[in-house]
Image (cartoon, rainbow, N blue to C red):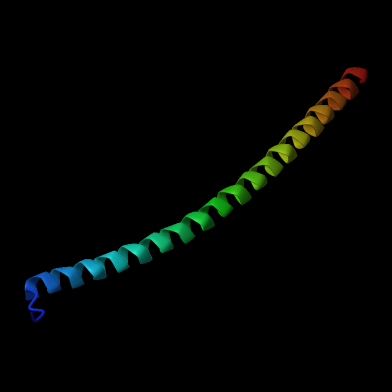
Amino acid sequence: MANTDNPLQEQDLRALEIRVEELVRACAHLKDESKTLRAQVEQLSVERDHLLENNASARVRVESLIERLKSIEAES
């Protein structure tokens, strides 16, 4: 018995195969992009924490300067 598959079925299978390959490539791309974005989020989180620490330190120094200026003013 010769292989006389319906050409339409072969076309459909080939189209499906192409689509699956495209989806696999898209999935790999999205996985890489997700990994990159997660690394960026981690880096930005560390940077944010550092900036918050600097901000708190600066606030303490400014408040200290204000108190010193008030005491100097009161002495005058």
